[in-house]
Each structure stands twice: as C-alpha cells, then as structure tokens.
Amino acid sequence: MSSFVIVLVRPRDPNNIGACARAMANFGFEELRIVDPYAPVWQEAVSAVGAHDILKNARLYNTLDEALADTQFSLATTALRNRVLEQEIIFLPDMADFLKKSPGRRTAIVLGNEKSGLSGQDIARCNAVLNIPTTAHQPSINLAQAVLLICYEIAQAQGFKPLRGHKQTVYPTDAQREVLVHELDGLFSAAGLKEDWPASTRQNLIRSVLSRQNLDRSALFVLKSLAEKLRQRIK
Image 1 (cartoon, rainbow, N blue to C red):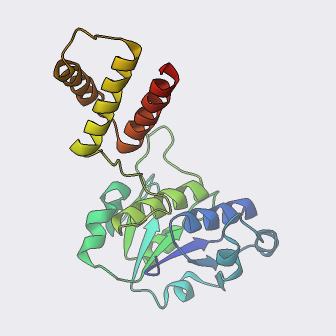
Image 2 (image 1 turned 180 degrees about the vertical axis):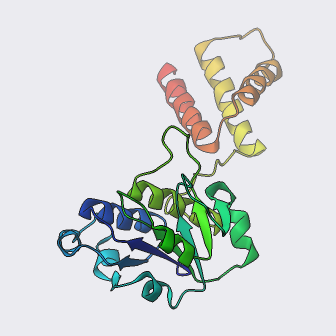
C-alpha cells in the first residue's frame, strides 16, 4: 500500500507503536511516520512481531507540517466528540467510495496520541476527517486498534490479496461420479444387498443419494477408495 502513510502524532505508549506497525504489516502498509515522539517511548518501541522493518525504517519528524510535506492528501482521525469541524468527514465504512474519487493519491492517515488524540490545530492542518463509527457510550478507540481497522478497510478497497485465500471447492464431473456409482453398486453386490433389484435401480438410488450430498471431488475420491477396500475385504 505504497500510496498510504500512517502518521502517529506524539505517541505515548511504545507497545502501541509496535502494535500499529504490526497492524500495518498485516495488510501491506509499509511507511510509518512519527511526529514529535517522547524520546524514551520511541527508544522502547524497538520491535514488533513481523513488522521489524516498518519500525526500523520509520521516519521521525518534529512537526506535522514536515510529516505531510510530500503527501497529496491527509485524513485526520478523530472521534468527533466535542469537535467543531470545517472539513469533510469520511466515515470508515465509506472509505472505499471515497478512495475511488482520487485513485493513487498519496494519502496520509494521521492519528493522535492515546490520551488526547489529535489537537484541534492538528485536525485543521489535514484536508479531511476520518471517523470510525462507534457507540456513543465509548466513542474512542485504542490507537493500535484504530490503525488495524483503517488498514483493513483501505486494503479491502484496494483489492488486497491475502496470503491464504478461500480454498475453491472443486466438484466432480459426471464421469467421476459414475465411477463411484459403479463402485458402490459393486459393493452392494459383494455384500448381498438388494440383490433382487435390477442393477439400474440400485445405481439410480445411489445417484439420487449422491446428488443430495453435494460432495466435492476429494470427498468423492475418499468414498470411492473406501468402497473399493470394503468390496475387496468382503470378497
């Protein structure tokens, strides 16, 4: 997600910084910027599982102006509580539609510290406001959790491809099903079941049962192997 940078303004908790980096790594974000960090906090934020490179390459800035200088658009995250805002407000579930308006624009996602969030001046400095809808009872979200939710939504909007996708079901062909039908019919004969039935009747019954089970190809092959083994043992 090279078009996006995550900007943390005056973060206070080194664990949160590491968790933010890990959340970024989960969804393909690489660039982390830190504005005016408290020195001891930054020195402690030295590692994050699976995100060491993000922390190692994070860039430090003295001011938000400097952190945004090379970006083309900026979104200030806030809970909206007691805020009078002039900018457009984008709610996170609408992020995909918003991004379609200006694809490829280098965008900064700006988040404040854990205690007070962004200042009014920080928010005013950004082009628009990003809000994660929550209940009125608990309008604020932990910093790392906010980064995780935002990165997830942007990744989905950008066509994110997970490392492991859903396994596609492969269904058997008619010819493959017929192999199982005849194998099961042979098992009927070997076991002496329904010997008074014509073979076509037994086979139609088996087809009917199989059609209701909606078996995938691997399951069908397992049943075929089982039927073969049982028929051989019966003989």
